[in-house]
Length: 219
Image (tube, rainbow, N blue to C red):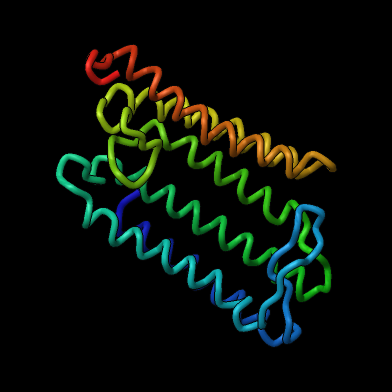
């Protein structure tokens, strides 16, 4: 995935979000539900202008990150060596946001509450995509498992992000599967997020200590 191709695809997805917003705007009520609790009950509302504008603005911000982050990365942590997985990851985030945007607005237009699948399937697929590219990331400050121990060691970085990638893929598959059954959807997502957030951090510390060790005066 090259920079120019990623920027073009990201821009196309942004235009898609704007088109969805333009389609939905005249069909929405003046007061639109924009937040729901775990039971699927609306507990937050906004104007229809905010409802159709928020996600395109957020997508624009992510698209701009593809321009800005490589340019401001410090020496020794440049993103060029991780260009393909970096751009793929941000495009996956944008695609997830577009899918959620369409799901929410479609539900609002048709008068139905968004189902858990509107959120869980795009999030689960995002986890899968992120997991498949994490093992190819080189040390950087923006994407991947970034702890003091991964940033201090190429080997700890590589092995930690390979483990995290596996966990992301498995967690994403579990999240998509949970969206197709009832009852356990929210707990499954919380468990997945907890595992992919905590386990790699702990693993990077243990691995660094095993490989590099700590000075006696540092303990």
